[in-house]
Length: 184
View 1 (cartoon, rainbow, N blue to C red):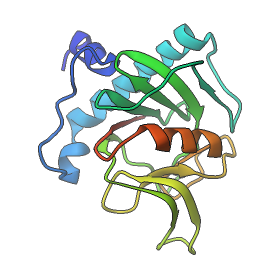
View 2 (cartoon, rainbow, N blue to C red; view 1 turned 180 degrees about the vertical axis):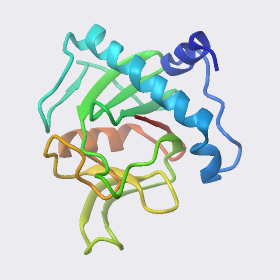
View 3 (cartoon, one colour; view 1 turned 120 degrees about the vertical axis):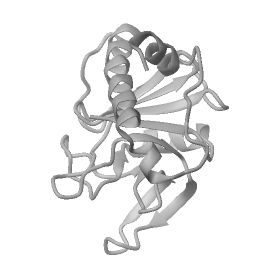
View 4 (cartoon, rainbow, N blue to C red; view 1 turned 45 degrees about the vertical axis):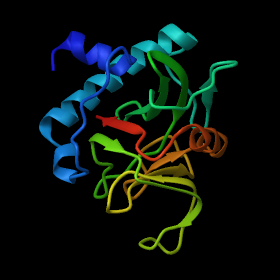
């Protein structure tokens, strides 16, 4: 995908081409990872243009006043390098939040994923029944977006932890099938 097509896809001017079936290999392909990485770089630029800031303190988020999301053109972009998540509606960045992604040994996967399952309260089957409020699962192995502790660095077992209030708002505006792009 060339840079112009990528920029148009990320900003919502055209749709992203996702595989017809939720095969993990397709979502984590080289092309999907490269597209997600470029989307994260573009989102960082949009953050500065939209909110006039280049960084946030751990646990903080910004939500554009009066901006509502929801529907087919809503998507989430996660930048692992900057530990930020970005929410788009169409071509408009409407929110940005700090995150805590997977630590060394349990990294967060990169690529393009659909939200597969949503639960307002979930408990981890793998990690000591840990609470996962506002859980939005993106793969068959249990990786999800959810509220959790944000120490300002990668610290999870692969999930994308979000501030609780942001996680609740995000949960309310996404649907099963909403696209999540996770880039390095």
